[in-house]
Amino acid sequence: MRIRLMIRMMVCMLGICLMLNSCYHRHNSHQQHAAMLEYSDRQLDSISFSTTHHYTNKYNFMVFKDSIHLMRQQPEELVSGLSVDSFSVKKNQLLVVTDIRMVPQDSIDSVWVQLATEDNRFGWSRESRLLPQVVPDDPISEFIMTFSNVHLLIFLVVIVVITLAYLVRKVFHSNAKIVHFNDIDSPYPLALVLLVSISAAFYAWIQTFEPEMWRQFYFHPSLNPFAVPKVLGVFLALVWSILIVGLACVDEVYHRLPFGEALLYLGGLAGVCALDYIIFSVSTLYYIGYILLVAYIWFAVKSYRRGNS
Image 1 (cartoon, rainbow, N blue to C red):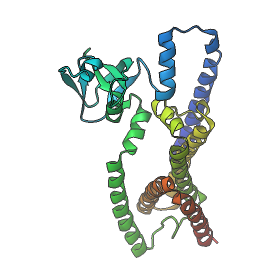
Image 2 (tube, rainbow, N blue to C red):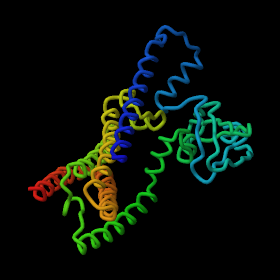
Image 3 (spheres, helix red, strand yellow):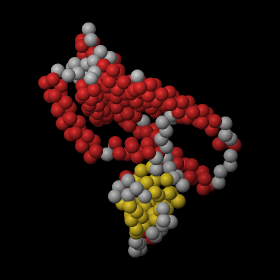
Image 4 (cartoon, rainbow, N blue to C red):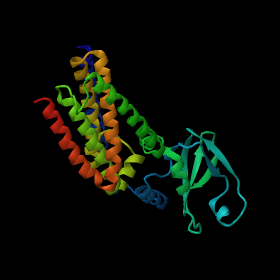
């Protein structure tokens, strides 16, 4: 009863947070319309740059790689062949954009960004060199960057495959419960794995067909489905659904299975979800994921109906 009560309270809190976010978003819409304001040429340039690059002056970054090197001198000095020196900024240190300059003479990258460090040092970097080494100073952006890391993805694949192989072997030897093959009489685990699979495929679809929308979301993230474009709103709604259904799964499993079997079942369920995410988020980028998704939904539903008939 305590677990069920806690889950209900968490769901209510999530709903309240979403409503508050939505109200805050609507409140901002009553501010003065942008067309009624007058902007200077510098402000117009900044707005134009922000539209295409998704950040502008006073935007905060955090160093994501081990370090980043910033040049003390002006970009034109480097382009002209003059000697320059640089300094390094270590990982997890904050950077603030203080100036953006177009240098057409630079054949490598015409966009240069000046950044200020936490200890009031100023330096320049080409945008093409800067962005792969930093991340927007927002937990959601950091999460996206972390899970977009190829090396982490490979590591997760290896860990998930090993874990699932162990769990499947243990389950079949002990005739324990496992999703798809010897499932419990509850629709929540099925709903969870399908939500994860659909979300992963939809995530890959956004990256393929709406890359600029995803890029804008990366630089200006939100957890409010009503504060973003409809496509991203659907994706965020799926993410919230995964969280809510996941909590329902935990509650359902602990009410239907002994503690030890429940842990084993939830471990297998988490492994299946992780494998689904990896398979569909990668395969959908190459279009084969759509076929795999339809086949997987058919297999999952058929397995559930057969096991509970």
